[in-house]
Length: 261
Ligand SMILES: C[S@@+](CC[C@H](N)C(=O)[O-])C[C@H]1O[C@@H](n2cnc3c(N)ncnc32)[C@H](O)[C@@H]1O
Image (cartoon, rainbow, N blue to C red; front, top):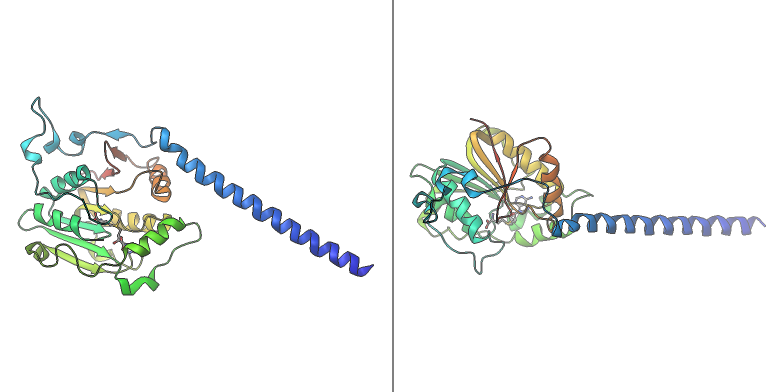
């Protein structure tokens, strides 16, 4: 008899655990589908046009303003490249920035383009994890697993697009896990900050907090990959937009924040 009770106890526990597992799985699937359902809806963050980003983009009846001319290289064949329109935005903003910080170097093509467009005395700091530092990554349980793997796969560069070019004199490469990077020595010092490192919730939150503390008055933060396919970036920015005046730049995956002067 006591054996029967024991077996019933075991079987009912196993069944409860199985039911819990299946419920959790369904919930996670539902959550993922909810995030992706934005694909056919307008995104929550209000759109802005390029001319709202900087006066150099103001157009007349002939088209783009000559002040928006930049040194440019297209993204074909470049790993994790910005689109050509996004590159134009970054390159044009770089022309009016003395100090730039980039989270996530990857090939270094964007760092090079920013370096080419900077004013003479300008400087780009670009931070990325070195392939030998992968064990320093610290993801959390609710971080998006797909983007955790992408962050690891993209951490394979230790020389960069600009390495043998003259722009390297204007670019300072920092190798670190971004959570371990000490931003305190750069307080209020950057005109332009591009957040394009690990696209998981805990990292985008940590990188954003650091960016806010490093941003100068009148400076700009750009987040890349504001889209449902990068669900942690997408949901974090949608939440942040309820506290701060964020704008989604039309025709790009950029969200922009401008600090008051
Ligand atoms: C999307 S790519 C950056 C693309 C680059 N900004 C461009 O425009 O060409 C992301 C980069 O962030 C780096 N990365 C990922 N996780 C990181 C972390 N925790 N700390 C520092 N860099 C990280 C990856 O190694 C990769 O080089």
